[in-house]
Image (cartoon, rainbow, N blue to C red):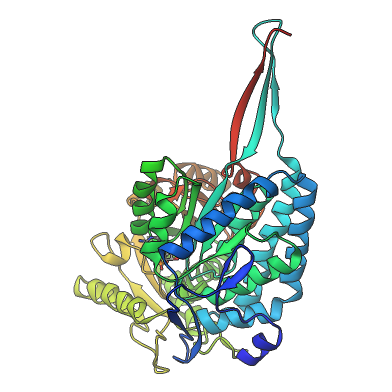
Length: 485
Ligand code: ADP
């Protein structure tokens, strides 16, 4: 399979700095592993402080030319990048399945989703409007200009190796910013292939740089630089807090997409088929490894038994296997630590009185495969309720009333995605408004799209990505007062 990537010219293993593919200064490399097989796919440059400083310097120089282009010129280049991503859909999806493990079908879906951000922001580039404000003195005119922030540091996770990059880089480049991207060490190959296509599309040398390796060192270099004006991050809440604190010294803007603890509320009046299909999709996509995955399935008493048995049946139909196989709907978890976390959460629940209805152990395929699992009678004191499991475990939590469901749903420091299933229109309004979350899916388990704002409240983050709002995070507002006219 790697031969296919190589033949397409998309196997890149060095960092991208100032338009050149470069090794680490000390020649160090790190291994990229296929989580389904343990096979070493490639050795990529393992970079740190020095390489990051070079990338920042290059992005800083390029900012002055890239931001001076017309929006239409930037838009055309981004559009070409989008077209190249789509033209190489198969190879990119293959690479993603190899280094991340997700089934090919989901990987192909991610290429479309990832590319859609580049297309969308190529269009939005032309719609960055300022304002003219009626003056308070007759001889003045008051203008508002919107200008790109400057050099952006983008740090991304492994669960969406392409889309988490394009969702940041798309609006950054569209607005005139330049970027230093640090992809996850687990999935750098997709990032590098996408960057190669950006160069081919004509994104100028230095506008998009990619470094990877020693995450804390790269993070610190980005944080300490006065030239980096913004950090945009998707990943764990713990690292997000570090980056926010680290940005204080140079007063950088920060956008954070952090962990969730998504409730998925199934009311007595739900259409059971819609509820099962929606919660299955919301829970088991990417083997449960997304920050918007349903983490707690709250089920009203009157429908609990019926829902539980239909849901378990649906979960039994999931096929665990190598993502390269056509029939697979559940790939491996990203690494051993991820499996150990899942095991710890399930043990904690059963020791406190929950019952495993299905699965509950490692899969016979070995490696980091884990059985799709349903745990019943989960309650508030369990880790499965309190924290994000980030794996294929669906906890069922019974509740009695709508107020109780809202209270349980909001009883967390996270606030990214929430889902509900109900056929009542008044209830869907009431509950949507009461949920302390940034995204709400009503009778739908997959709601992300490039045209709608994605982001969390509380400790799930700051800022919004995608949509017209996603552009604002990369723009500064400048007030110009023209006097004595
Ligand atoms: P996840 O649990 O999704 O892997 P992490 O927050 O650990 O979440 O990782 C998300 C991204 O943050 C990755 O690119 C990772 O390398 C990076 N990262 C981890 N620690 C740091 C750090 N101290 N500074 C900067 N980036 C970091």
